[in-house]
Amino acid sequence: MTTYGLLIFDRVEELDFVGPREIFTASSMPRGGADTAVLIAESTDPVRCDKGMRVLPDHTLDDHPPLDVLLVPGGTGARETQVHNPVVTGWIAGVAARASWVTGVCTGAALLHAAGVARGRRVATHFSYEDRLEALGGVTVVRDARYVVDGDLVTSQGVSAGIDMALWLVGRLHGRDHARQVRRYAQYEPAPPYLADEPPA
Figure 1 (spheres, helix red, strand yellow):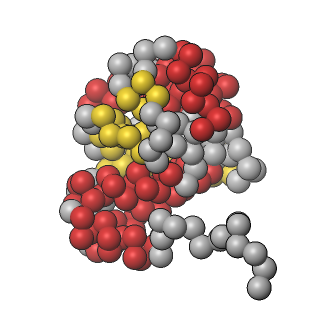
Figure 2: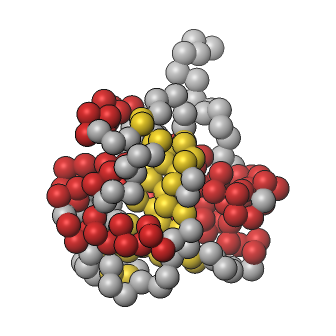
């Protein structure tokens, strides 16, 4: 059994956590529902996401089950607000010390940096945040990879790249054939079907 904990907070980017959650829950299905993915927030209040979606947490920082995997998403709230919230950054540091894997999506890397988890590590983040993260110091920002694995830390570039990262992780946990099965279920294709440069017929 794998328990995935996905941190959420006001102004979190929706797909940063919804995309990986889809992969994690789809991964559980062929395993007989053995795995659990829970949303964790500082309080039980509804969370207003960056694009307006409202989400209800399953647990608070104080009452969640032990986590095998921690996911820290990005968004305006990650880089502008939560990096200055010692309750959240302290919680991330504590959970990261016990979890088997710590993952970050987009500017969730800023929170991982603030919590000390990303210090001295190779990380990926949203392209628009790479210079700012690098200027904080103490991390090596990788600019040409959808996701980066550094020991037990896996970080991804922005938004949709979190799905790639999540597929890699379930493949690492449960095998490549399993990850391919999950990808097929989600009908996720690495090459986007929208060809922006294709002339009209």
